[in-house]
Image (cartoon, rainbow, N blue to C red; front, side):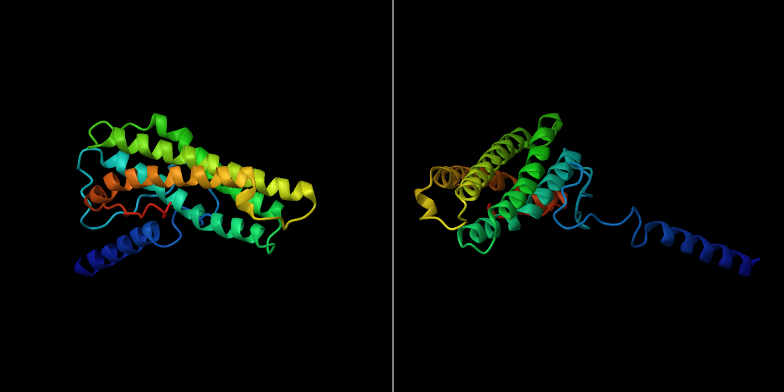
Length: 204
């Protein structure tokens, strides 16, 4: 009887390991692919308290931030590449479109996020909304600057700061950074309690 119990226990362990082991849930998305909003599982730490008020909303916001952060590193290299003639305007436009699509998905989802019970939840959603709007506007202005290069038939033009779309993009991007500063000032002190990642204002 004891041997049978041991074998049953081992068999159950193998079954459970098979359910939770690597690869459960399908292959991970390709780097840079947006995927559906909220599909990213929240990153939690052993110290995270999922019973804290607003824990579900914090987890959802954390998934949005990770999605935005995943496209953030691609934007400046695309801008620099087009400006320095090492990347074609069409390639730069495509990179920025992926960032726009990701941020637009997040922006579309924010109004339906319930932050009931989450301390400072309304301010978090408001500042993140402003951040996404400003970031999208800046990305579109950079795209317009790239399109103008393509239409002129020359990827290398004069000082981009003299171009109206480029200058507008820089202005709106600075406004977005200001909004991000306001967001992280609220988010970062709260994040560790909920098992979420803190971010610099340039991190997403």
